[in-house]
Amino acid sequence: MPPLRDSQSEILQIGTFSLDNQLYGVNILRMREILLPQDIVRVPRAPQIMEGVINLRGQVIPIVSLRARMDIPVRPFDKKTRIINIELNDMIVGFLVDSIEHIHTISTADIQEPPTTLFAADSECVTGIAQIGDKMLVLLDADKLVSTEELQESLIS
Image 1 (cartoon, rainbow, N blue to C red):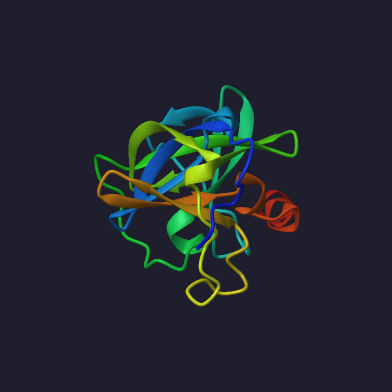
Image 2: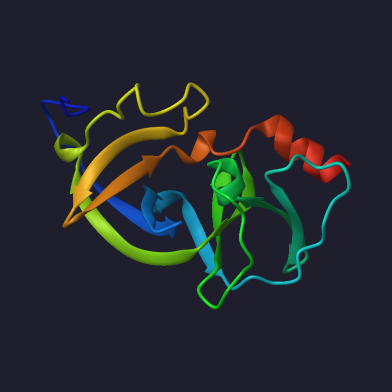
């Protein structure tokens, strides 16, 4: 597979986390903060990927299960479970992950396009694959992790 860019490579800092022992990452510039799971209020009739909402310093933050979003069976929280707050469309959204890993610096020249045979059409949030040591890193587009409609449904319901 060819890299995403052949010339004029950029250096990216990727914040990584795990889901079901797989390494995922998003551009660190999109991450606002990392939280321990707190009292999540379930919202009736919200989309299945929505865990609910939390109140963070007076602001209602929708919480998305990345396990559910990525079609990975949901499991109970444990001591490593975290919420990553990411800014999307002038809104902060929390994403539940199994654990926080590291910040990695990678070149865009080292990012390969995801194989279309392995990723379903609804996996548009996967933007690339990179090798980090002995692990494969699945890069995600933060803007495509959840739709504006899903967010509005979760807050209006």
